[in-house]
Amino acid sequence: IAECLKVVLTNYLLSSPGMKLDVMTFLMGMSAFCLVPLASYAALFELNHQVLVDAAGVWPILVANCVLAFSLNVIVSAFIKRTSGVAYLLCGITKDAVLVAAAHMIFAEPVTRLQIVGFATASTGVFLYSATRMFPEMFSFEGVSKLIKARVKQETIGDAEEGAALVDRRSD
Image (cartoon, rainbow, N blue to C red; front, side, top):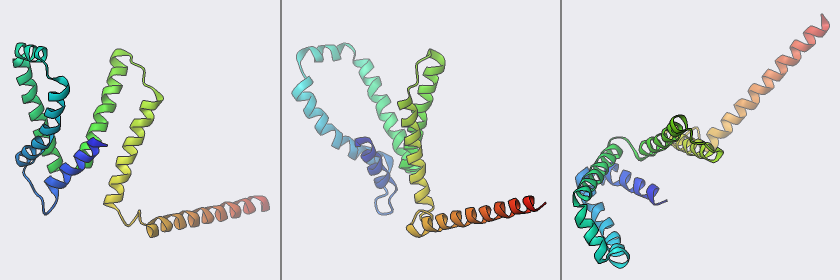
């Protein structure tokens, strides 16, 4: 839920007509919001002398990790600004499915039914959400009722044609 809220907030702040922030300003604001709870948690539960000694020993790795994390946040924010939050989520679902499929093919990891159903459900949900946003008239009550009526009418016509064909064959 937190990831979805983050994506929706990012999409809104970077793409809304009244809130068009640039990527770096957005990251500066989000960093402040993330720093407070994370620093508080670290100060209360994680900070001790041994952690500081260990961190001093691997500081180049920690700096590289920070640079990569910042770069990833810039890329994700720029991607969401240029496309949409839905496109970002769809890319994430596709990435996860490809990773599971690659692990299955390369390392013979089993793929469970739950994984298949989960990826299918997530992909279908994103597809339906996108479809309702692109074609709202088709997903309104009137649009759905028109589709059902057209389908029933089509089936009725098809049944009548099949019945007429059967009668013609029996009379021969």
